[in-house]
Length: 301
Image (cartoon, rainbow, N blue to C red; front, side):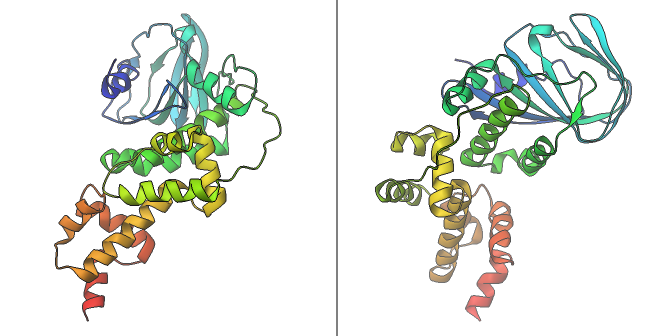
């Protein structure tokens, strides 16, 4: 079975870039979900390399205006011109898309396999989504823009991304793409919540593994629920997404350790599931308003 790194790299090899950042997360069942940020700061990238036809769609969001490019499907020119800032375009890999990138670019690309769309439709109780379709010249979509924006901090520091957060956002993205670009129309959604036993079990699991990168699918499997259903039900029951609840508990544990021990911040960070003291500081400040060292000094005084 191919590694996540090999899988991720296989979808960006056609580009010559100055920088690439990628996150891979599991889909609802067997699929993999991928988001990449691709940047090339100089004009004249030229033609992208051909890609093998496959049941995959690329949903691309422009982080800045591309002044001039040419898009080809099956060797036929379908668009020549610019792509504005925030424009969204879709590339069906069955159509062997290529592009002549004549100006600098900075974009977020969601890689959506057909199997992930099928899983999303089944999860929603809807008919299968046959394809994702968008105008050749692109379109504006505020939801896709905000999904891309929400992933930028994670793409800047992928080593700090919890599996739970990446999984939740990419699952939500895939479901939205199926709806907005694939015409998925599920039946009216019933309200979901977790039982007291289920919520207690989920909380016990997260409390017991605060120092680990526990995934959304692991928690959902314990509840015998699909990942997306579990995430939605957890939020409805607790008022917080599972990943935000987990971050909050890690901060609470760090606060307790700073009150009760003289351990250095770096050791406390590792004990609470953070990748570094800097990672702890960023998350801690987002909840508490000050850095861990400042907070500890205030407590000592």
